[in-house]
Structures are given as C-alpha cells and as structure tokens.
Image (cartoon, rainbow, N blue to C red; front, top):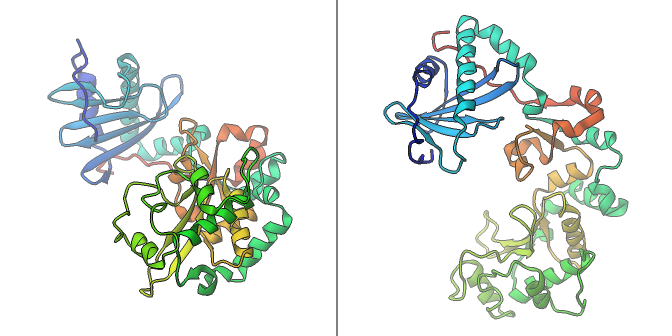
Length: 381
C-alpha cells in the first residue's frame, strides 16, 4: 500500500468517515497478504452505479473509486484524510456523496444481504463488468475486423495449423540444436528479417544477419555482438553467463523493437529438462499487431531447414482458427496490457470495451461469460 502525502489542508475527517470505517468492518472481506479488502458495488441517489474498493492495513484505510472520477485517498482514524501517492488530490465533495450513498447501501445490505446482492447482479452495468466472448462470434459479427488468418494467407495458415496438429514442434530434432554460435544466431535473424519485411523497411538483402540485427534489434545486446561470432564455446559461455563480455539488464533477444508487449523476440535458451548442452531457438511475438509477422519468420526459418520453436504453439493454432476468446474489459480500464487481467487458460489475446460491440450487442451479449461480481454480506450472516 503506497504512502500517502500530507493531510489535506483545512480538512478534518468528519463523523461520516469514522462511521463508515466502523460499519464496513462488520462485513465479510477478502485478504491479500496482510491487507483486508472490501468490494462495495452500490447505486447512488440518481441510480448511477459505483464500485468502491476499501483496503485496510493496520490503522490505514485506502479508498479507491474504481469506476468513477473521485480517485483515491487514505484515511487513518488518528491522522485524518490524505491524498494517496500516485493519485491526484481527491475531490472531497464527491467523496462525501459517495460515502454517504455507500453507507445507505450498507444499511440495506445488513437488512437483507441476499436481496441487495440480487439487485447488484441484475442492475450493475455491463459497461463496468469484465468477461469473455468467443473470437469466432466477434469475427462473424464484424466482417471488417482484422483477421490474423487473412493477413497470413490461406496457404501459410493451413501449413502452421498442420505443423501444430501433427506434433512437429514436439519432436526435439525440429526444435533443438546441439551447438550454436553467435553468427549462426544472427543468420536466424537474417532469415527472419527478410521473411517479415514490412512496408518502409529499407535494407539490402545481402546484408549479413549481424548488420540487420544492428539495424532492427533493441540495441542492448548484453555483449552478444562483441563475442567471437564463430566460436561455439564463447556462445555457450555467454548464454550461461560465464563469459566476461556478458552483461545484464539488456534485451539481446528483442530482434524487432516495440513496446513492452509489442516487440518480437528470438530467444535462445537451454532445455530445462536436459544437461546435454543443447539449445532451443524460439520466436515470441504474441501481440495482435506482430503475430502475422512472427509467423512469417517462423515459416521461413523452418523452410531454411533450421530447428525452430514458437512460443505457446497451441494458442497460435486457436488464434488462427478463431478458437480463442476476446476479453471484455470495464469502460474505465485501458486496453494497454488488459489481456493480462485474464487467466492464461482463458486464451485472451485481444480485448474490447462492451460499448465497442455497438449495434451487435443483442446478438453478442448472450455469448459473453461474465466474471462473478463480489458478494457483500455481514460477518454474522
């Protein structure tokens, strides 16, 4: 829990805050480490729904207006109200209204927690909820939507699906190397760059892999460009962090620059199950904007007769066949990294807001699997 700032000037916590803190502790909570957490979903007087999160650690209570504009603040019974570090100064008038409405809701929950929670289930806006919907339905409903299989083309799509279904990538002779040098790694890069050349990328295909790596990679190579390019021993020492030129903190495998989730990596690692000194060379590029590019690299390296693997191969097949799911995220949540809000087994690689479904809501909504809303009930229930 972050430290708060100084107490808000000329403000003393009134009885409403003390009463709310006392009241909320009479309700069931979840725990995370040493924090106690309450999730309160409630309507205000104008029937606008809110999601209030209260986190308690020792004498501190942090209040976060999850879906609204009030921000966050910290309340201590002995120290009053403080702005929470990383958030703008809280709007106290707005917070006063929120806490007043939340207090009224807690009184209703105490009288009949089943009826009040039923109302939450029925009335809490879908725009504020999180869920998943089959990609196949989104693809069928939005004819103009980007399609990975269409970008890649029918022939390449079918070839990749067949490779995965036939177990090609589960055979060690197709994915592992007995030895590897830096120059051999850069040759992988050269094949990849040429195969997935994008519009506007100007380079001579006669350039070496090392030269192309300098052009397109992240630039923080951890010493990979400095070791003897033809030495098996030096590359082995470098990858095992025994080489004096090996540095740390870089991104040597990021062969195509991008953001934290939008780059392409060609990773080399030792098989975890083996001590025989082998190497696995594996492509990573799961963002929607880089997946087709990554798969073109994969096929070109494969066609060159080199062992190659691709991360999360089963999910690649699902995405090509639209067997994955699209995440529906609450309106207040940014798209950036939002797929990480979902479990890995949910196969969510793309997200959208409920409002983006637009005129297809009646068609799509019955297929959305919504995540459960929290149940608020008294401790003695």
